[in-house]
Length: 179
Image (tube, rainbow, N blue to C red):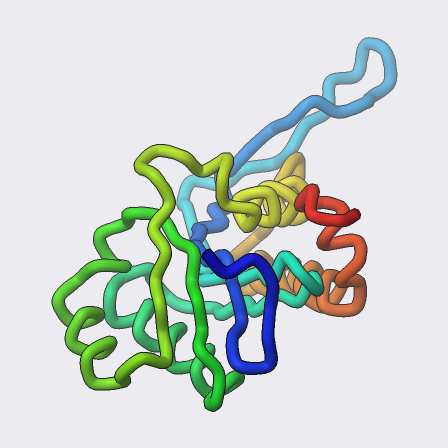
């Protein structure tokens, strides 16, 4: 098992998420007798992201996409390889179908040994630190907030991404990976 990075390898926890406009009302403070209200409209929009987090240094890689499927997952893998072309990229991931699709298997055979997948046990999102990043993202971007359209959601996500890229130590603390 790889426990820390070397110059030849990088360990990343990965997953995908969807940020939906109709998402969530969460507990919040408000004046006594004045319930918090969040406007809504009759249609739903979403933005999808693939993400990777390095639990050793707090670096994140977030990739916007139109959908989460095998083809867009391959785009994400290509992006990761472009970032670290000369390193073994060890990916810890769940059992989502898109991670094991035939086109992904073919890609991995063509690419040779530059990727190594470590699968988490089924139904164990608590073992993947990026799930805590997704919760933080959703708590920040959509909880108790009205977004008028997809572009508005994407702008809010971009602000969040810029924030976490500047604060890898806070990322590690939020994920429970700081010492």
